[in-house]
Image (cartoon, rainbow, N blue to C red; front, top):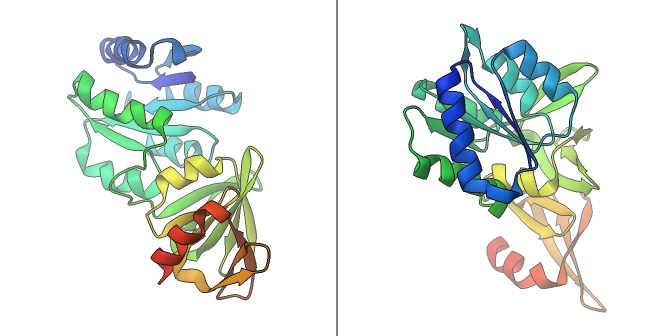
Length: 232
């Protein structure tokens, strides 16, 4: 994993680095520390990150200025901050976890282990997915999302207005962030189950989900019984 720590207090940054190395061990490929918002933004722009550990107060600068951009990227973001009152907003933006300061190694380990076990985030309060669009960041309300299709390292978001947006996160990462109403019905599809109108069984053990908008998408054979039970 390539990890970036964004923290303006050197003592805390060193503590986070030490704990992270203890917890993730040889899964770490690189672990860097940056203490300014501008430096962090430049580093993110260069790509090749798997995880950002972000403080929300960087020498008086607001980490939320970076957060909206960070959550649109392919990596997960974990906030480490003393500003507990901002946790809900951070989750709404789509962070994997919010670790309040002061913290111990057990709490940091709980957050970091989610990055390698694909454990879903709690309390599933993601309300937006941030996408990069024409040099800007656009927040897509989760309520406008019908389904997500995997497209290699990227994903395609299909929205209620008929439009489609591209997201840099993988299907697996988005599945971690979204509420249980979004089900992985196929290796390439994550669907809002409230949008499923009918489940269709075709010859040759082929299963399909008909959506409220008329679209038909596949259901994996190994997923059919589970999806059918939850849909009913």
